[in-house]
Amino acid sequence: MRFEAEDWAVVPLDTSLAKNPSVTGAKAAHLARAAVAGLPVLPGFVLVPASRAPGTPTGPQALRAAWRALSPAGGLERAVVVRSSSLYEDSETSSMAGRFDSVLDVQRWEAFVSAVQTVPDSARRIGPLRPSVQDPSADGMAVLVQPMLESVVGGVMSGADPVEGRTDRILVSVVRGGPDRLVDGSTQGERYQFTRRARPVPDGRTGRRGSRLGRPRSGTRRERPLADLPPFHGGPQRGRRAH
Image (cartoon, rainbow, N blue to C red; front, top):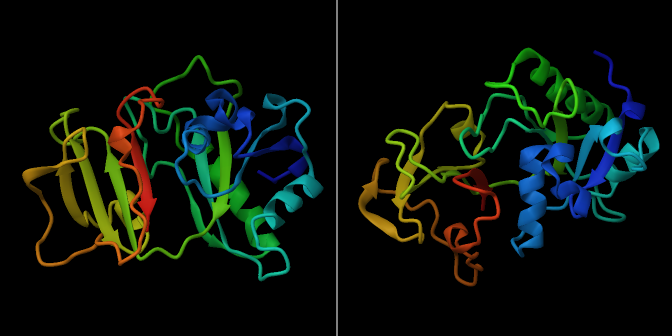
């Protein structure tokens, strides 16, 4: 289907409207809420069907301005990542990780427009696991755009053990580079188990031994453990992290 910029509204990730999952989808809404809670969140914006956000800027000029704003003023054009943000993702009972397409390292305007079309196209190919009465439109998909990071170490954190179903454990999988290889299932990386207070579980390391993937360099800031934050997402979550 041809991409028409007039059909999409641009919602900055740091606005109150972005916190509403019925507008921006669960993934983008979680990021917006995390930013409000004081967590470090990359800047970005969400493209949503214009009918969901009346009065919000739409059209090619608004989209191009939002895309350009992610690059430093007067600097080189910055690569971006274009991701799905559906009502069916990152819920209390299902992450649907890797089900929809994401496009990494997107550079130049033409490639960006193509990537923006790729994400909702993948939603039309892959039906949701179950219907949602909150879905405000036939597609139920928004498009999340943020700067692309060159990751040294990336990972996926599951708020419940996906194998045993235990919710008293946090499972963290890490790999060198970005977390995309973990999400698409091409590798399991190194896996660690923690308590809900982010303390290591004895013998909780399930990956191969001998490497130190996540040790911070001297002077590197340690972020606040996610398990110590208020449960403002409503339950066990699955999230990606790059360092």
